[in-house]
Length: 162
Image 1 (cartoon, helix red, strand yellow):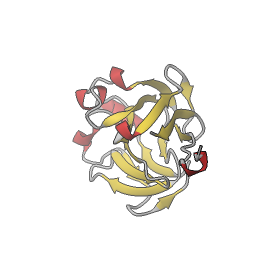
Image 2 (cartoon, one colour):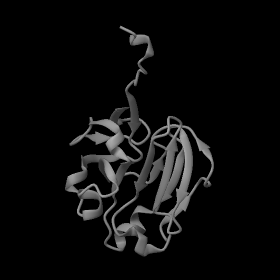
Image 3 (tube, one colour):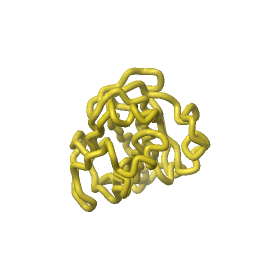
């Protein structure tokens, strides 16, 4: 009775922000991510050199060292994409930001271009955590763990508001 009053929460998707192999967030060699301090998600052991918007939204943050950005999706979900581990130590070297904070982007919009050779020459990994902030508000299904994914094309997470 009164089902029409219940708000329907449809399943939404998040695309891979970069090409590579999708891995469990718990397997990331950084406690901030593996213990889900910032939220739940997945990681991608990146093989690509372009980081894309995983869904439609607005860029909320680009850290000064250019290795991470925040995006608020059009439905309100907030995400953090963190390119590599310890890459903050590069102080922006090896990263070219292609958008501005406050910019509305479509899923697949290039956000950051990375210089893989430079970053890898510094001995850094390009494991890229894809974190849903306030993840306790969502029912999250990680649908690509163990698979090779294509940036801006492969679905890596399905979710819906609880």
